Length: 326
Ligand SMILES: Nc1ncnc2c1ncn2[C@@H]1O[C@H](COP(=O)(O)OP(=O)(O)OP(=O)(O)O)[C@@H](O)[C@H]1O
Ligand SMILES: [Mg+2]
Image (cartoon, rainbow, N blue to C red; front, side, top):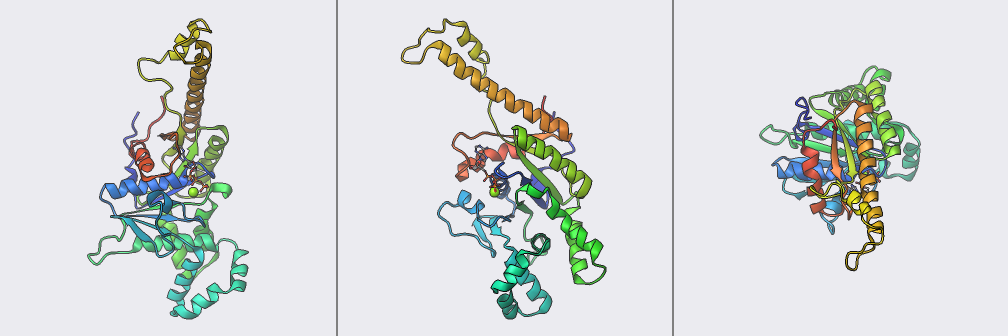
């Protein structure tokens, strides 16, 4: 059943892709970026991980996008939001001098000190995303129609989204409070921002996703209205052959078809495919039922997600109206 109240994914200003490690966040973020650019939008995919993973999917031999970012395809830019680069930029803007700030931030002792300090990375990274969201072109229109954030794995839930609010409640005046308020405003604006959890149709990711959505509802004021279930095994048999495993099982186990293994072995393979699909469907239903959210199911691609063509295959199901599984 299509959910009429779900806004098109591409109509947001900010989509934050999150989820457990290895569930497909980067693939999903890159696929959304590609789809948005194909739809004529100006889109930025902003990576928060320390290694660039989006760029190799879009341009296998291309140079890294780095902090300044790069337009990979018409309308599609990629950047890595390095927290130290963002900190330099922020401090330079605040203090009015780039050279000295760059030297301080590049200093090893300073970095060691900062590596132990909590919260600032999240704040500065989200601050940079806010800054980009505010950027305008000469004609006054937004520099980017859509920003897709490839967020860090949710080892710590979505605590990173709460940092601006924590700062706002702790700091009473000054630019830090003002900037944190602006970031909080963006994140908590349901018209602009969507948190998009990605999971696999398996036990552990399902459980963690259900917890994640519950935590988001309790703690973070960010909108979450659909869950991406990635790597879902397709229906096992072509239409019209839905009972293939049953038909094979009904044959004498040693019946043979040319050089193929006996019918009993083929029946086992077919039963495995059916069971795999059923297991996946069961978790898809669980995710939806236990979160109360409709889902977008992405197909399992046999060779993984490595090239632009693979991203194109994920785009249609990502942009579809989210559904409550039957
Ligand atoms: N739909 C899919 N079908 C098959 N393989 C997939 C699919 N989606 C992702 N993969 C593969 O799963 C692996 C993890 O995907 P990806 O890097 O997008 O996940 P991630 O959540 O960003 O991981 P990390 O937490 O390490 O950043 C990759 O090898 C990718 O090719
Ligand atoms: Mg990733």
